[in-house]
Image 1 (cartoon, rainbow, N blue to C red):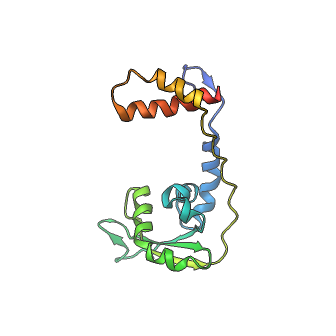
Image 2: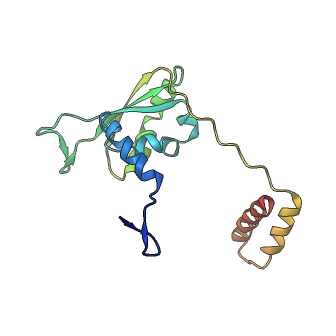
Image 3: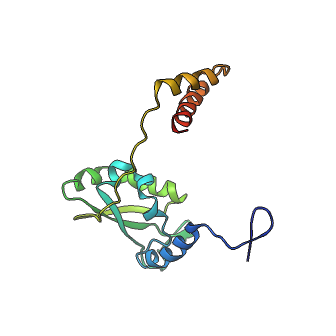
Length: 168
């Protein structure tokens, strides 16, 4: 039984706990170890590359005497499926992708990328973008943020305030 924020017993749990638990065994068979690379691929590589690629498998070298780097596991090869016609571009950007993946994990887990050309799985449709706030909402937000002397902060507060005022 879990304790909630108020100290009372809480039976509700975030959906992410269930999804992570269900997905991790499946992605482990593909060498990923955890689902973070698949779930956050768009954030790691950016929308442009996520639209034309998807991680398929992490191929780890066999364990043995030469299978460790700095007393840790040897880095893996990340296998990525890429839409036909974009492989050359991704091949040139492989060092950047490796750096982004390793930065996401916080250690040098990938040393090489292997590209497989072919169609990628269908992606869910992009989220609709919010409409720009009206002039009245912007004017009201500027008035509310007028006392802030730090210009970048005042501009950010104005944009936020205009969005909030236009949705309410």
